[in-house]
Image (cartoon, rainbow, N blue to C red; front, side, top):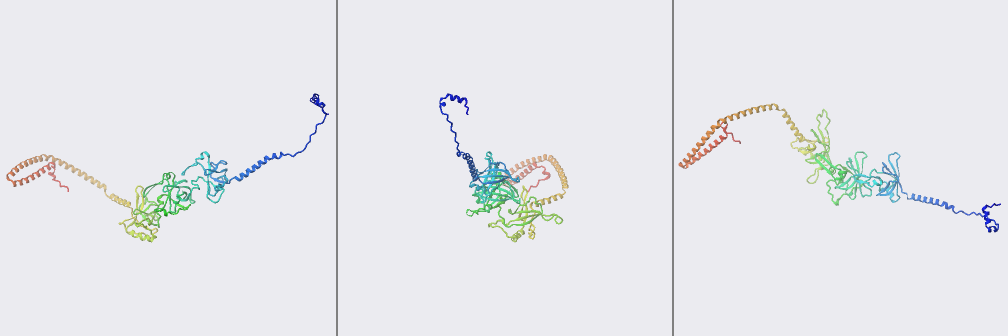
Length: 568
């Protein structure tokens, strides 16, 4: 039984049509099961996401470039995910991680290169990696762009056929990259000097290359340099080329004087290396020597003069004994024959042991002579092949007075050198060929002879009784002074007493001569010719008497002393 709500009752009563409708039941719903199509749509989105993710992953794996490891001494300026790898200022990779090595001695930088044909080139075994930072060096200023963008890793592609995944990072940026045409050569020097990476290389004062690296030799006795000479100038480097330091201003003060050398202003500030052909090489364009191969090793000389020395032939060693001082003589001092350089000093030492047998030992100066350094007028050179040829040449020269002597090459510095010259007055001597090395006769230096002469003179003067002689001379001077004073007093007395009488006599003589002249004039008119001759004689006598009177008036003391003798 169904109870109707008040609202429903009221509705039934208000609607007549409802009351008149038949009382019929509502139809019951029918349930049926249909297949669901929305379930697979729900899983479609995740499946599509997984597919896209797998596709992106596969694409990322297929497009991912090779990974490399770079070992640096420090990780300054390197950040994971930010530091790029650039080749010719183009991004070719990105740093993925930065961590310390297991022994904490290096920094391992793992980077990923962009996939492409260039990745294999950058992975060649001789490729070089370095961190680009602002740098001021001999090659100039570089890396200024990193002040704003930050440091990045630069790479220089190698040429090796093998590839590698681990590289040793450079501490400094290389000045020459592998794509610059040219050749690299090895130099060997005793010291570094003022050279640095980037120092210029000159050929006839034209910059043609740079110093790319240097390192101390394994034995620690030399410094090795790698220099790069750009094309086309690398063809001027031949087997006969000579390299020398052109760094700064070279000032040398030795027995030959003061010499100053400089290559250019750039070499003064940053140092440099110069090279040229060998000495006296007249190279014609059609006879140019073939260029040296890359990697050829040359010696790096300290000075141009040393580098350009003519190649010496066979050298002969001799020993010269010096009994005087060798102060100012150094190893390397020149040996000259009448001003021509023919050798150098090799060693200076005491000859023999100092003791009872040799209480006054001489100084042994070992010299080396190169006969090939003596040119002849005909254009040839003296090139003795052995000791016998040298002996046949020297024995006659020594017999005619050839001797070795120390001479001063520079009065300012006191530098000495060994001179070979002829001394005709020298005592007979010969070369002792039985000694090793042969003993060459010598003579005392001219300065030593002068010093010995002055010493002998000083000894003789020291033996003289100088004090006694000085006292005797002083007494003699006093006696002479007193004598002169007495003579002067006597002359004054004679002059005072004789002057008035002498003047009266002269006046009377003058009057008598006047009267005589008048008398002779009268006689001349009376007597004629003979009287004229007599008058002439009398006139001569009068002139002589007048001259005597004038002399007596000026020198009355001559009446006592007489007339002095005429100087001859």
